[in-house]
Amino acid sequence: MRTDLRQQRPNPLTDVRNLGILAHVDAGKTTVTERILYLTGSTHKRGEVHDGTTVTDFDSQERDRGITIFAAAVSCAWDGHRINLIDTPGHVDFSDEVERSLRVLDGAIAVFDAVAGVEPQSESVWRQADRHGVPRIAFVNKLDRAGADLDAAVDSIRRRLHPAPLVVQLPIGAEDGFTGVVDLLRMRALLWAQDRDTCHEEPVPAALRDEALRRRQVLVEAVAELHPGALEEFCATSTLGAPTLAAALRDLTRSGEGVVVLCGSAYRNRGIEPLLDAVNAYLPSPLDVPAVRGTRDGAEQERAADPAAPFAALVFKVNSTATGRLTYLRVYAGTIHKGGTTMDAGTGRTERIGRILRVQADRHAEVDLAVAGDIVAVVGPKAARAGATLCDPAAPLLLEPPTVADPVVSVA
Ligand code: GDP
Image 1 (cartoon, protein in one colour):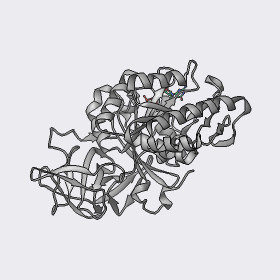
Image 2 (image 1 turned 90 degrees about the vertical axis):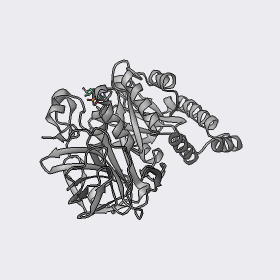
Image 3 (image 1 turned 180 degrees about the horizontal axis):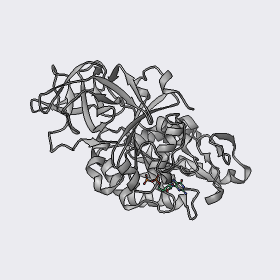
């Protein structure tokens, strides 16, 4: 369900998702991002990768090269949740930047090509995400392509990436005739009509019922094997209800033991709504991830994702834009107010927060404050670079050791 970001009250932290999209180049990351922004109402026109009009890839150099170079964080809303979408560069040359984006994410969608399955870059980004402990769900994209094979793609996830794939959908139709999916939790068919962007729900077609029941059983058994709580219910009733199954899938996603697999065709705008529902249902909020760790006077310290705690935020991107120097922050603890003062924990320099912006695909919404868990861009800091910590001067905390800083990037 689409919700309007502008009409929303500030989200409780439990309803925030800091999300990244990880993929091998060409698997469809840009197209998935584009469709998410379109469906969540962040853009009113669908961009197309091939005509250079996508909104996240807003830099002309990026448009020319057709790959994502500059991470941009975009806020959108889905079903009462705020999703901060952090664009992670997919090209292998930019893996330092991928590392930094991974650090500020709480969860990710890994996009795979249904024809190619797991590709070398999907594997390397997957390993990086493992190192950062980022819970993931998988989206097998391009089901409309000739030769698309969900089962083969799932098999390559199992063999090459190793988590237990937990397939929650059965495709309806194949290749050019791919029209929808059966939701195996609820046993309902989701169908996308030709030339329409909205999906509708129907009973599972009779011809697919046996296959859907068989696949549901495979899912239930895989969940029951990994999740002792679910196993108890399974043994007691020899079946699992959708809410219990969903709760078990959430736990397995967050522990990294299993990966929920969904499928679709981003290009044809099929499969994105259930993907967004899965982001909200399975991926963690900032409250569900471990408290951030940093150092104070050389000693390690933890700081909880609490708006009342002393402020601490990591700068993960600095772009020079027409709006000014935009410093992208992941706020880990505390609250910053427009006009407030922070300290760069690495240099001791005071940095003023002039304006706080929630960056949306095609506009910037100005807000008065940002709290723990949030991702915002601020205008005001003059020297803080990617990797810097901005913190409460009265309670300094250094989140990353100072390194050779990334250059400030000019975005046309
Ligand atoms: P990225 O490099 O991962 O960001 O991939 P893009 O989103 O740029 O997509 C790469 C190419 O695949 C583009 O030409 C897209 O139009 C195309 N593409 C993306 N999603 C789909 C899909 O679901 N089906 C088909 N047939 N093509 C797709």
